[in-house]
Length: 315
Image 1 (cartoon, rainbow, N blue to C red):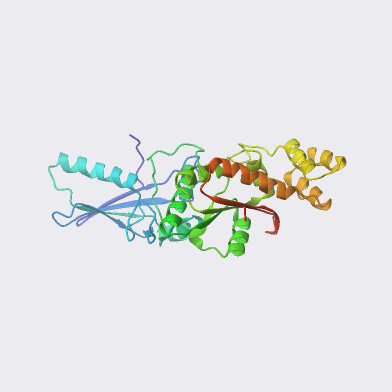
Image 2 (image 1 turned 60 degrees about the horizontal axis):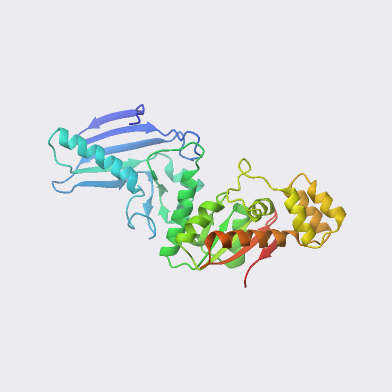
């Protein structure tokens, strides 16, 4: 069992308080270095173990999460860990398990602006996730978990069209193009595979994938993890796409030796070759294969200024 140094402790009247400093390790997490506070107070006889959101911890306001609306945003796994601890102490001292547990994260109200909680319907603060109770270095499991929960919330709200974007520029552009609500937007980032695999078993009628030329170019080449450390844009394959789109030999050679996807895009645009459309079509084909039917898919490719440069759809 993991052990952590306590940051603070106190006992006053019927309340015991303790806190630790969150160490997120190598997992990207805005709560790294935040103080996590737990307060325990005795409850009424027969009340059982109850959870309460303290300052900096949010409350669930939308269906689709593994918690009822109105509940503090403390997921089932961390709840069960706390319940197990309380049960062990109650058994040791032959006491009733009637306690109220309040979890607080000082400053959480500001930190939540850097998360996807708002569109998941978690208001007023951060959520305590803990899908397994274990952080795996570089797993980015918390991001993928948020993608899954975003899909769950959209399904529970009856949303039939969602848009998953690789970044903020493409997200803003696709939201404006389709007049989508906050709950219809999924911050996919680099995790196309995490999105598509979950949608395969939890389908939504229509999916729009939106992103930059380089990221969606990787997807078109079959990569489901779009992070620069885990996949590369194949310039040879990109030049083959340009050839199929009608590019002349000098342009094909220039794209093959281009330093970046942006350079390849600019070269094709200057020659009026619809390379971004080819990328969109390839990305759509990979997404369709991953979902195996049941979802209508369109793909929108944006430049860094949020201008639409390529698209592919069945509409």
